[in-house]
Length: 153
Image (tube, rainbow, N blue to C red):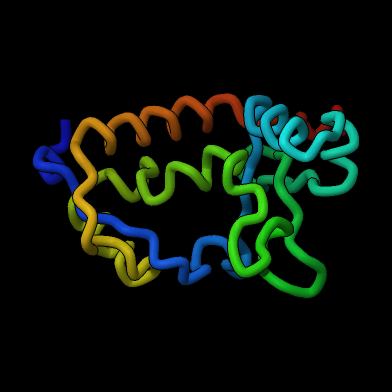
């Protein structure tokens, strides 16, 4: 366990939109995310993908990953409209922020994230157990992201 969060961490979302409307930001989906979102919108998975997703290539591994679309000509998530319109079914990547592997790697990384997210180290104390639960969910979900090899695309 990382000692820097043994007593928990302070975090409270400020609804600033930095994470939902980030230029160049990408929300990758797992099968669990896809199923949850499609069901929430009363769509088949195929319908959901056709209307709300795109496959983006990662140049490092030459695979294509299923990602949410941005709104046309903006950096906003397709589900952003003065708030998350699919909040109850939002993807794991969104639900677990800021408790992501890279951010949680050490106290310096956590504190540096404050430059991006004004909710870091603010108000609400998140217990060590809750931090670890979110981190574990994020890690598990990352291993289940939907991807297609370049030669199958």
